[in-house]
Length: 267
Image 1 (cartoon, rainbow, N blue to C red):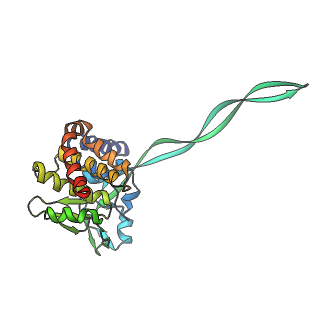
Image 2: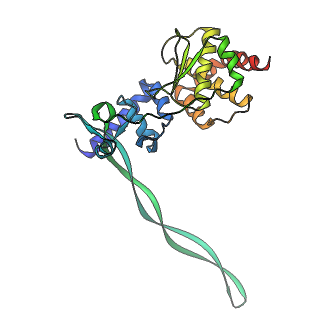
Image 3: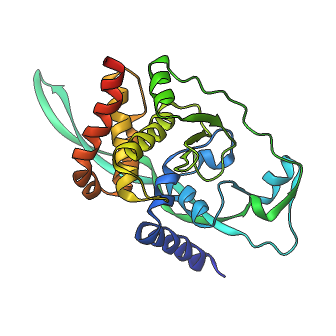
């Protein structure tokens, strides 16, 4: 496959994600901790998730962590921007004094600017297509603010930490267990809102767009009302990728979830 075909394939992979895989679009918004893909663009992280993995690296990058690509494994391609300095002519006015009079003259000069001129496909391999030394798991602990201890107890919830695997947090409808693969407060609040939404309205299993928007928007509102700083830019992107249409449908439901949690802490 030539360069142009690989670039076209990458573009089509991303378009397919926006059409049929909103959960992977949302997942690609978040960065992990310590993986090479953390430094990739959103576009390239989305390509990675569409290939069924949350960790992809180049051949040598896998060797550096004691793993090797399995025989017969096929690479997929991310896109690295190609930039170069290009000349741009600009005009500016300058005042000069001649014979005691101020004269304005126009000067044309050339400056060089950084310009995107194309993309270069870079082969990477999925973690699932490698073998060797296990990767170091990120060790972290989650400190749940004391304000939420009572509601956790009332809902019969159990909060556990886990290694990252496709999701930064999950809520199990049957066991009432919240599993967190990130210490970020917004992740906990998102799953707590799922639990409250489940108590009030009942949830369906899976990544249901309406349910995800309710949880993320309610979590952001709760954090704001209770004085916690969270990355609102990420929240905005998350909701946008599920769709603001879903958000408008969800306002009343969001309000009930927020009132349940905030009201509990103010009572």
